[in-house]
Amino acid sequence: MEKTIGFIGAGNMAKAMIGGILQAKILPPEKVFLSNPHKEKLEAMKKEFGVQITLDNKEVAQRADILVLSVKPYLYSKVIQEIKDEIQQYTILVNIAAGVSIESIEQTFAKKVKVVRVMPNTPAQVGEAMSCVCVNKEVTKEELQEVMDIFHSFGEAEVIDENLMDVATGVSGSSPAYVYLFIEALADGAVLEGMPREKAYKLAAQAVLGSAKMVLESKEHPAKLKDQVCSSGGTTIEAVACLEKNYFRSTVIQAVQTATQKSKEMGKK
Ligand SMILES: NC(=O)C1=CN([C@@H]2O[C@H](COP(=O)(O)OP(=O)(O)OC[C@H]3O[C@@H](n4cnc5c(N)ncnc54)[C@H](O)[C@@H]3O)[C@@H](O)[C@H]2O)C=CC1
Ligand SMILES: O=C(O)[C@@H]1CCC=N1
Image (cartoon, rainbow, N blue to C red):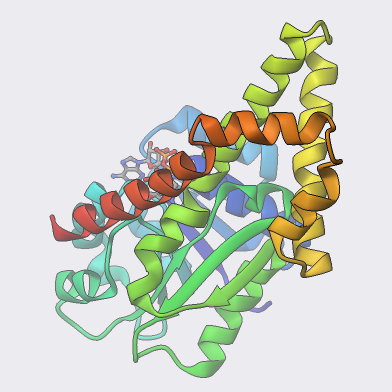
C-alpha cells in the first residue's frame, strides 16, 4: 500500500492494530506513525514494532494519509481540536471509539472531512479481528476499499449501517473480554478437578477456538453443533443443564444488551 497510517494514542487497540498490520506486511514500519503523551510507552512500541514515534499528535496528523484516533472516547473532541488544522483534504480519519458517531466528528471539525467509523477488536493482534465499518459521504468507494484492505489484513471486516455500531460493540468489540472470562472459568473448573493450570488454559482455549471455527466453517446452526456433542444420558448434557439452570445464555444475552446500551449512552454525551 502506498499510503501512510498514523495512530494518535498508543494503547491496547493501537497496539493490536499495529501488530496486525505489520504481521500482514501490508505496510512497512516506516510508514506507521504513532503519538502518545508518554515517552516510555512510545519507546516500548518502537522497540517491539520499529514504527515512527513522536510525542506530538500534530506531527502524526500531518504525516498520516489514514489517521486512526486511538484514544478514549472522552478525549476525541480535545484531540480533534488539537489536530484539525493539520488534516489535509485527502486525509481519511478513522474513528474507532465506542459510541462516537460520524456526525459528532463532522461537527467538531466544522469543515468537510472524510470519516470512517470502525468497531474493531483486540484479536487484530493475531490476525483474527472482527471489524465493522461505515463511512460518511466524503469517502469515495476507492478510499473505503483501501481502508477495508487494512482491516482485512488482520481479520474479518464488514460494512454495516451506522445504526448497528452500538450493537456491533456489544457483540464483537467488547466480546473478547467475555470470551476470556469464559476461558478462565473453564480452566478454573479444570484446576478444581486437579488439572495443572497451564494445561487447563490450553485445553479451554483450543476448545473455544475449534468451536468458533466449526460455527464459521460448517455454517451449521450452533444448536445443531451443540446437539452433536451432547450424547444421550452423557456428560455434556449434564453440564448444559447446569448452565441453563444458572441462566448462562440469558446472562450472555443481557451482557450484549448492556454493552450496547452503554455505547448508546456514551454517544449521547
Ligand atoms: N480496547 C479494545 O478492545 C477496543 C477499544 N476500542 C476503542 O479504541 C479506543 C482506544 O481504546 P484502548 O486502546 O483500549 O485505550 P487505552 O487506554 O489502552 O489507550 C489509549 C491511549 O491514548 C493515550 N492518550 C491519552 N491522552 C492522549 C492524548 N491527548 N493524545 C494522544 N494519546 C493520548 C493513552 O496514554 C493511551 O496509551 C477507544 O476509543 C475505545 O473505545 C474499540 C474497539 C475495541
Ligand atoms: O470497553 C470499551 O469501551 C471498548 C470498546 C469496545 C471494547 N473496548
